[in-house]
Image (cartoon, rainbow, N blue to C red; front, side, top):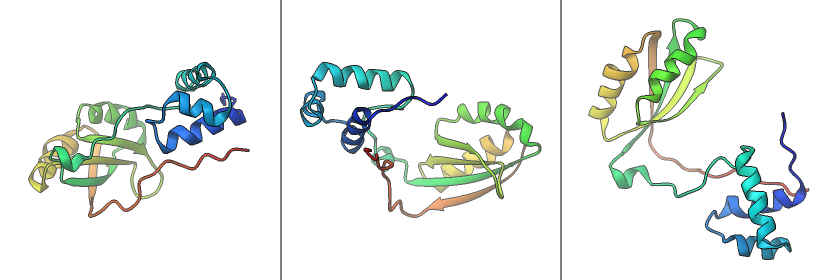
Length: 154
């Protein structure tokens, strides 16, 4: 079921998606409403799953993870996806997992300290999961773009 979003919600999302540290008072001033209204709207959007999180993004390199990797995974059967996902959830270095079309059944994004750590994750963890029949590893050399989708206020 689609969540109803009006122009005020879109304006609030536009402001906070550009800088989550913007105070609710500042958002209220820009939108021409009270801080209480903005707080209520933000809380409602969090509850409804429109806003998926808040907080600070930690640079993986600053805490020792120098290798960002995408791994295409092929499964014995696509129906094994949910069981494999549960196994992948237990590997904290995996930060994203997608059920995909194309060359792979799944695509995951993970961080490793170095190539040795990456090889251990692949050989000793991911490829040992029942149902995983093959993997293909793509190492990211540089992330050039990282941004939120634009919010279009109608």
